[in-house]
Image (cartoon, rainbow, N blue to C red; front, side):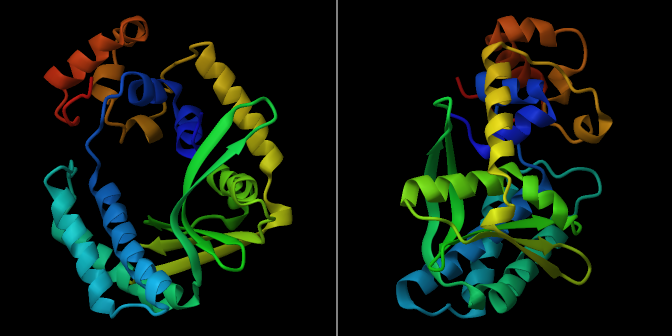
Length: 271
């Protein structure tokens, strides 16, 4: 099977996919990733309470959950030059509070963190976990970001398209829309909410892309992307740059050993 994150990773850099999913080298998250995870925890706490009781908990409950999650993950996080963990934590708390005040009251959850699957025409399976499935047949996702995005690009977003297929095949009913709530970590926190009706979600594009990605994986097409916009933040850079990456394709153990011995950016390798 594939997941939307696997598809996006392979398209971004196929060698990055190889290190993550074949060698199973686990990268330490950078500060922004830990911030996003903390916000996710806080939102989940609030919406789970609303699902069970019909009402949101006090704001302090969700913001405290986000702060605690950030503190737990901070010891395992690679904070880069210029990162200030205390500011990232404060932003996580503020973004969680913003979601609780602006977005969460609109949501009528049916499922939280709901696993779904879809089978494509060629038998390839996709698996995904939706942040929220609402009672009106909307699938909702939330993310943190440092900036706003072009909303038109979401019509071909593989994750939102996968949610559409997964909802319809898993629950056996048509989806109404997919919605992305993007929490913007700027000086004044903001939220960008975008809803895409079912008719505008390009699921056929996802089917084609997923098939081609799967074919590339099967043919062992793994190459470094050599794009500084990607390589600049990639934790695999210490073992990818240079000539040895070709040896790793034949012997993944070499990549795991190199990561374990020489790369401060990695958590201990799983074997």
